[in-house]
Amino acid sequence: MDFFKWESLLPVKALFGDDLPAIEMAGFDMAADVYETADGVNVEMQLPGISPEAYDIKVEDGMLVVSGKRDKQTEIEDKNYYRKEIQRGSFERRVTLPKVDLKTENLSPAVSDGVLKLFIPKA
Image (cartoon, rainbow, N blue to C red; front, side, top):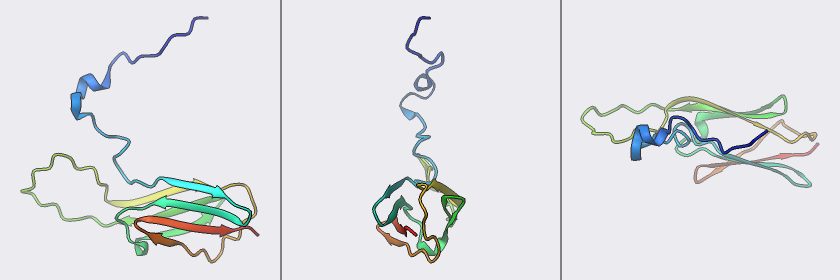
């Protein structure tokens, strides 16, 4: 069997030129880092532009669930948008936690500069 480098039959950049939609950047930027220490699990998640009062945090079925709503802003019709990528409305992000016994009640997250920081202690 011969192997060959896959190349798309329809190059996306040819369709859009330099105006290639930033699909990976569109939507909510809720990237997360999860790491385990001797005492528990640490989670850091980006939640830019979302106040802590606007989302809920819970653990269910071995997953951290962060859900909430980014308020819609009234659009100004005379604005001449070049891009409109910031998503508004409801969101939910599920992050799989390590398979260790954790104390998931009474979670106390901290938020600094748009980053949620959460420590979940081991049981």
